[in-house]
Structures are given as structure tokens and as C-alpha cells.
Image (cartoon, rainbow, N blue to C red; front, side, top):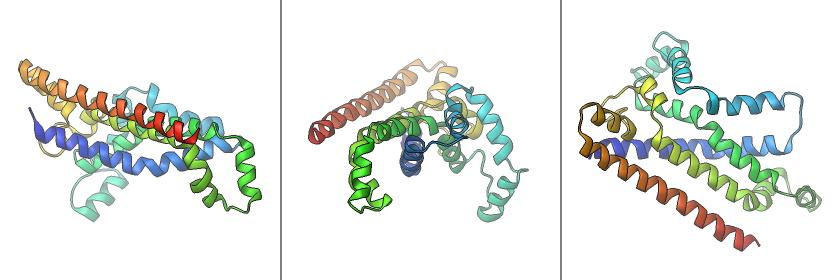
Length: 222
């Protein structure tokens, strides 16, 4: 069992969720309530990682974040290391690849809020930010929670884009999914089976906990 790879995967999933939580709330709410001419294009861009092969997105990230790119050069100048084939590069790739998993459920959660409730909050003199925290988020929270759990679970199991952007550097970019692949390539089926079982267990428990919490929140709101 490669505990270092598991720890790295959990850390990657944690930071992906932390960064995408406010993004899912703000962007999901924006797409749920606003109507404008370019909305279908923005929604398509958000959903694009769902249909793009990870290798395609990984290739463009390598070009965009590589040492010869402006972003890569700026990062190297600030931090003295390249962005690709690093944990920080994995975080960037994970954020982009998980954007639809974070935004779509949150958007559906906000869309379920009745227009009359939002108008009532405005009539009571609530500012948009206060209405978000006091009225909208408590009602949309099951969707936001689902978004974060899907993001967490999907990050744990992601393989293609992690391999493209991060490679398989022990302790730096070798996640649990990459470690399983390496063990299979080395014909170490016992280790691969153990790590696979651990990953399945964590993902199953995480998703089950989400359904439980969502049901409890729904009963309280009801």
C-alpha cells in the first residue's frame, strides 16, 4: 500500500474542493439567476471538460503552464520551480477538470429556489450578499454539498490529466490512481488490489455520507 500516494491524493482533493467551493457558489448562482446573450457559451465552456478527453485538456495545460509559456516563466521566476510536474500544477489541472462537477449541481440547487423567496428577501431590505447567506445558501446547500462531494471523489480517481500534467513523481505528483497503474504495470496485482479497495471504500463512504447529510438537511428545511 502506497500511503504517500494516498496522502497526496487526499491533499489534492482537499485543495481542489477548498478552491472550487466559492467558485461553485458564485458561478452556480450567477448562471442560475442571470439571463444574458452569452450564457449558453459560458455554460458550454464550464461543461467542456466532461466531453474532452483528459489527454486533450492535459496537452493544452502543458502548453499553457509549461516552462516556455508566460505563465510558466512567471511562476518559475516567483517560486524557482516549474509549474508542470509539480503538486501546484496538479491543483490547477484538477480545478479546471472538476469545474463542471462543482458548478452544475450548485447551479441546479440555486435554480430550485423560488423567485418569490428571492423577491421577498429583497423587499425585506436584504442586500444581495445578505440574501445569499441568509436565504439562498441554506436552500441551495444540498446542491452545493453534492458538488463538493462529487469534486472530492472525482479528484481521488482522476488518472489521465494527472498523468499528463504531473507525471509520476513519488511524493510530488504520484497520486493513488497513478500508483495503482504503476503496480499493475509491474505485475504487482496484490498491491494494486489493496489500493483499489481502499480507493473504492473512501469514495463509497464519501458519497454515502453526502446522501445522509442531504437527507437530514432536507428534513430540517422541510
